[in-house]
Length: 126
Length: 363
Image (tube, rainbow over all chains, first blue to last red; front, top):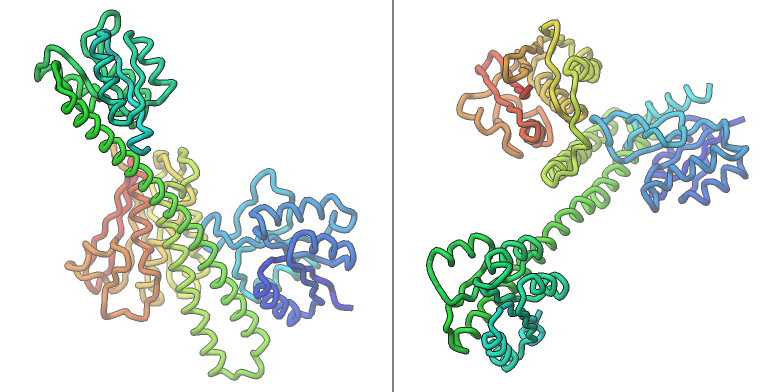
């Protein structure tokens, strides 16, 4: 059975582009366009992994989703990848999350190389 | 502030002056408050925020000069005009130095009083207008950066992500030619994306929001991080980075991430211009004043007459190596970062032999 990935981002094109990559990687992909929708979908489809954009309607929407997931039964153990469009530190590097940030398993900077994305997901799911 | 709503305050211990001024100014349509006592005058000024204050220089208890000094410091953009019976250049100059805008010698005619008031109000109006425009300009500049970051960067990110997905899903049907075109599209868009990022960084340095805080830094660890960061590229090109570092380097004060980016930028440049298999040398030393880092490549070099311009935005040395692409802002970014650290960045080059970039950080 295909593994399920939930993708939460308010940019529909980004969702579409990333969905194509993930499907090519052999995953079943679920899309959500905001935090609330994403959180509810996580509860209903129980994905194996979720990818969450950091800044959606508000700059901290992504953190909110992560906190909600981490305190819920479904999301407690779920591997989570945070996406950031802002290059907070260093060129094209992932940044170290702030201390009070709810814990995610990985932070990646947009745009993401297709091969890298699939490789990281594979690492997290194995 | 219109002329009719202008509020004037007269601080003078002579009742006849207060009454005379009130009559003249009220007839001209101004609102007038008068006060005979200096200390009370200061209180009223703080409370009512008048547009123009007339202050008699010679009063009991507190002198007009002191009032001028206090009010000019306390109330931004207030127009202070000195009234005095013993007009002299010396007292005029002194009161101006303390913050007065104009000077009205006794005895004065109603016309003179009106003219001075009018001029003072115009001056205040211009000052306020200038301030408003400056604030508006700064606001627009700040918002422009936000505009750029959201409206220009995010579509580019999405386009790049689409290129990624297009490449991966069409590998089998596009053929090599198609994939090459896709790759070119990706690279050109990537350049544009880098340009926007660099330009955004420059704006952030200029408006002071770039640095989080400056702290004592260990340059060794920054140098190591930069070399590690570039390692994949260096290996791919068969280059080698040789470091010549002393046993210890004094700490410098700065922002680690931005200095790291300067190093990555400069070393990155060196890799671009060094032929495959070439050597890049990174050395560091220090004297009483500076900690110095230098990065030398064995590349094509830069003509002497072009050297002074390489830190200018979008400047490009034409010719020999046109295939080397960049945003044209990399070295400008480095220079701004070095400026912000009170440091220096300079270059030496011999055509055909290579280029050395020197970074000097004050200790």
